[in-house]
Image (cartoon, rainbow, N blue to C red; front, side, top):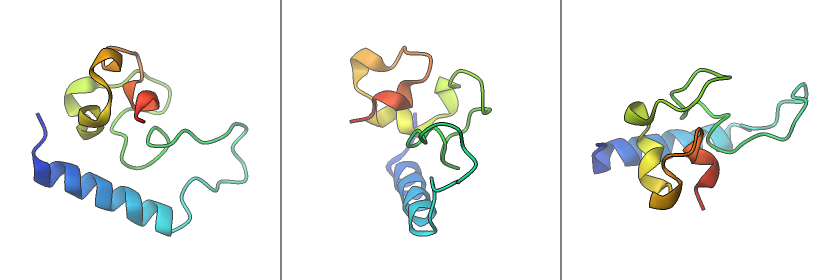
Length: 75
Protein backbone atom coordinates (compact mmCIF):
# COMPACT_ATOMS: atom_id res chain seq x y z
CA UNK A 1 0.00 0.00 0.00
CA UNK A 2 1.30 3.42 -0.92
CA UNK A 3 2.02 6.04 1.69
CA UNK A 4 0.75 9.59 1.58
CA UNK A 5 4.26 10.70 0.62
CA UNK A 6 4.25 8.24 -2.30
CA UNK A 7 0.92 9.60 -3.53
CA UNK A 8 2.09 13.21 -3.25
CA UNK A 9 5.32 12.41 -5.12
CA UNK A 10 3.41 10.75 -7.94
CA UNK A 11 0.91 13.59 -8.23
CA UNK A 12 3.71 16.19 -8.23
CA UNK A 13 5.47 14.27 -11.00
CA UNK A 14 2.24 14.11 -12.97
CA UNK A 15 1.79 17.87 -12.58
CA UNK A 16 5.35 18.50 -13.82
CA UNK A 17 4.65 16.22 -16.79
CA UNK A 18 1.54 18.28 -17.61
CA UNK A 19 3.39 21.58 -17.14
CA UNK A 20 6.02 20.40 -19.64
CA UNK A 21 3.36 19.73 -22.27
CA UNK A 22 2.67 16.06 -21.55
CA UNK A 23 0.06 14.22 -23.63
CA UNK A 24 0.77 16.45 -26.68
CA UNK A 25 2.50 13.92 -28.90
CA UNK A 26 1.65 14.69 -32.55
CA UNK A 27 2.52 11.16 -33.69
CA UNK A 28 0.07 9.28 -31.47
CA UNK A 29 -2.75 7.68 -33.47
CA UNK A 30 -5.26 7.88 -30.63
CA UNK A 31 -6.21 10.33 -27.93
CA UNK A 32 -3.92 10.08 -24.91
CA UNK A 33 -5.12 8.20 -21.87
CA UNK A 34 -4.58 10.31 -18.80
CA UNK A 35 -2.32 8.58 -16.24
CA UNK A 36 -1.94 5.46 -18.38
CA UNK A 37 0.19 7.30 -20.97
CA UNK A 38 2.14 9.32 -18.42
CA UNK A 39 5.46 8.58 -16.74
CA UNK A 40 3.40 7.98 -13.59
CA UNK A 41 2.21 4.60 -14.89
CA UNK A 42 4.49 1.71 -13.86
CA UNK A 43 3.17 -0.78 -16.45
CA UNK A 44 4.65 -1.70 -19.79
CA UNK A 45 3.00 0.09 -22.71
CA UNK A 46 0.69 -2.69 -23.98
CA UNK A 47 0.15 -4.76 -20.85
CA UNK A 48 -2.32 -4.92 -18.00
CA UNK A 49 -1.71 -2.95 -14.84
CA UNK A 50 0.67 -4.34 -12.20
CA UNK A 51 -1.73 -3.48 -9.37
CA UNK A 52 0.78 -3.97 -6.55
CA UNK A 53 3.17 -1.38 -8.02
CA UNK A 54 0.64 1.33 -8.83
CA UNK A 55 0.26 4.27 -6.46
CA UNK A 56 -2.67 5.47 -8.59
CA UNK A 57 -4.76 2.49 -7.53
CA UNK A 58 -5.68 4.42 -4.37
CA UNK A 59 -7.55 6.92 -6.58
CA UNK A 60 -9.56 4.28 -8.46
CA UNK A 61 -13.09 3.60 -7.15
CA UNK A 62 -13.11 0.29 -5.24
CA UNK A 63 -15.59 -1.33 -7.62
CA UNK A 64 -13.21 -0.70 -10.57
CA UNK A 65 -9.90 -1.81 -9.03
CA UNK A 66 -10.07 -5.28 -10.57
CA UNK A 67 -10.29 -3.94 -14.14
CA UNK A 68 -7.38 -4.79 -16.46
CA UNK A 69 -6.36 -1.10 -16.49
CA UNK A 70 -7.94 0.49 -13.42
CA UNK A 71 -6.42 3.96 -13.87
CA UNK A 72 -8.82 4.51 -16.79
CA UNK A 73 -11.54 4.75 -14.15
CA UNK A 74 -10.05 7.49 -11.96
CA UNK A 75 -12.73 10.20 -11.73
